[in-house]
Image (tube, helix red, strand yellow):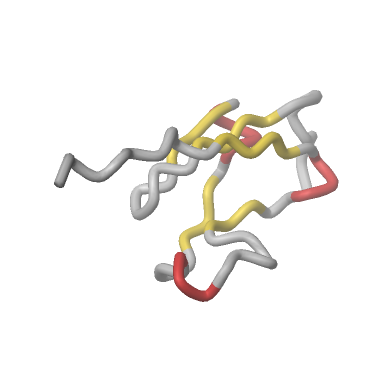
Length: 66
């Protein structure tokens, strides 16, 4: 029996329309759920989820004020 094959980390591109971003995203399979964490990807440009390692990349201009 060999070592289990590792999957490449998932990359999710998001835009201003997707804000606020949280992981797991809607539609995530139940087997891969973890506690919800909000990610300020618009400010950082790109962030990793601390639970599952999914990389969120912001595409577009940074939102202006609220």
